[in-house]
Image (cartoon, rainbow, N blue to C red; front, side, top):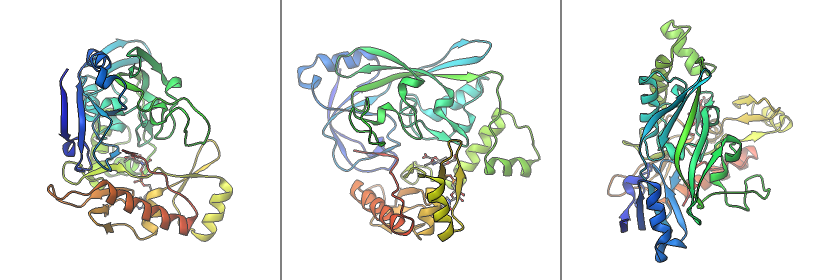
Length: 354
Ligand code: EPU
């Protein structure tokens, strides 16, 4: 096991924020975690698990021991009459996994193409796009308990998936609902994830942008590869490429309100973009709320609101003078305040603030 000191993290977080890991260990297999837990200086240290860094805001040097997940490998575990079961190491790049499954004829992840980050991070925030959430394609995951070193496997119910949420985003006592809960944040490291890709494959098309592509191309029954290409085109057209402009995807979750609250808001704001959910609640488009408050294209210091999609905060600084986590959070708080003042809704950030 190699214990690295003062490791720059600027290229390990998609915002491109400059910060260091005071102590970092690269985890390429479960034995690396055993080695950490047998090292007296490290075994009791607070730990921070770092994947692709695509959903974090670093507000300073990371004092916890950073475990950088680099567990690789992807394979078809099993093919049954009902599904392909595919497994990938937590350190694999998510989009490369999506591409690999399609190249091999295992369809079902195409709507989740081009989401930045690693495989191990996908269950943490239950990634979702264009009508598919990770939980719809999830079979199980393997993880290691960072206190005891024991390996364990969780199914979907045990992961407690929610909208951009799971057991891995919570500590034991604090759940966003306010209820006491069982949380694994900082306590477990995901090593492998298995996906269940249902057979026969069925296209998920319901989104307006996909329907537009179908009309434009005159294709009414697209195959999985066609949907994959469209999703890549749609995302490239409106979301910044983190290689070129640092960002962490959607910065806020789309808030949910009661039908009564929504009716009240509509009376004041007739144009508000909203979607009725199956459980009777109503989801509001956070991007629209932020846009309506005039934030699109605005900046505070080197932190900016992306000009094509107000839900995405971006790094407007150069490589040598990047945005700081403090600037990102100052902008985020200013946005929260103005949305709250106008709509009475407190937006909840999506990334993990470190
Ligand atoms: N809108 C505006 N102005 C804006 C941005 C959006 O008016 O600046 C309006 C749009 O016109 C649209 C509505 O808001 O009517 C919703 O926007 P969009 O379809 O772009 O989707 P979103 O709600 O902003 C969510 C996910 C994305 C995911 C897309 C597609 C969240 C927080 N974000 O975005 O996920 O790709 O749907 O499914 O749920 C991510 O999590 O990082 C992410 C990119």
